[in-house]
Length: 216
Length: 354
Ligand code: SF4
Image 1 (tube, each protein chain N blue to C red):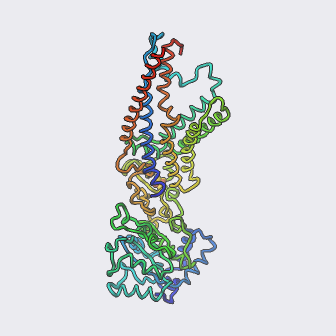
Image 2: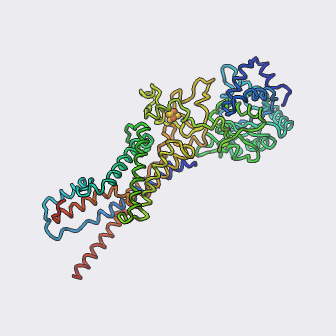
């Protein structure tokens, strides 16, 4: 079995198994723990609705913070959008998803994919630079750095495989798939879970504040 | 058996012009990445070369390798160089049969001990009874013939890496030459079949230099297997622009777009098909509209479906991810119930403390 056979065979399969199990486990484990009923009557009759609205309203910093958070908001948006384009726009990625799910759609030209990959990587560096330079703001744990490394690795290795840099193409492709496998396997256990949590945590804070009559 | 005639004399006798011969030499020199100035030296050395004794053993094979080499419409220089070598034993091509054929092999081995080239096509079954020639198992015949060989050339993917006979579940326990013989220089010329130019090119190299060329990590001559086919493919601009044939008869296929999505394995395949091409430079698989199947790579037969693209995950006997998700659901629910129970207990305790 070559490295590539291992990577696109058992390695990626098991990483997806770990990701699926872990994600559902953590989601259920927390969601079943509902908050108890309010001890007093909610101040705002539309509290629930406002809570759900928070899911979207928190996608942007509120006015007071615009200037202070401009840098990381911009970088985070660039990163998330570029990564989305990379994940669902590049033809080999679509081929992978098609094999897994049966769904398929047209891909982007390689140049666009490479552009998005470079943007994603650059913004990721911009974000880590801020995190490292402001330890007091972020209180980073090793898990945060691990998440960063595991996120950056597939971008770096993917770009290298495309550009035929480093080892031979099939070896680089194998390393790229393995780096994605590590990312999948780590996904449920670090802050990457925010991809799921953000909906619930925002809604929860929204509902709680609304019930207390806080203007949100 | 080694005879006095040189290759130059032989080709002259066959009516090959000096011009055609030099053309062949410059093609060889460029394949072997030799400087242009060395073409005449190469030609001189080739002309002076004397016939080497060659024993060709065929084991678990389909004769495609021999066919590829000998089946050309007009005799090519590749074919003639092949004719030039003193083929002392070759099942398919020799006139002798039975005991006489085996006697010829024994004689060649004896007379040219330590000198002859051993060419092998086909894989070797480790279960001896599965393939025998004149009552001798393939395994024994290979070991016996390899002992006195100057070098071994494993022709075709079967001899080089086990090939088709080795495909799972490998019923005959097929093995490649290099898995069995470890004390002789071995050069692999894989392909199903290999390019004729790679076979004769290697022989020409051996005749002129007296040694084997530089090899890659899979034992293949870098001159012929150093390049990735995808890097040399004339459809590559379509790949870069994201234009792919989705089926074999759609608009993209008619317009000659990239075959990546139809399972082209060229991105992980190293061979000279795109430059040298087949049938006197007429075409090669990708040019004829079918993706590369990666036939010069080890275990190509077991690397997922021929029409699965390189990027597809190989999930074996059905993805277990859905099952895993249900396991996660049960584990999550369990964890949650425990936590809930704990929460209720704590609440009750807090209330009773008040
Ligand atoms: S047809 Fe095959 S070798 Fe040619 S560009 Fe497409 S993937 Fe590469």
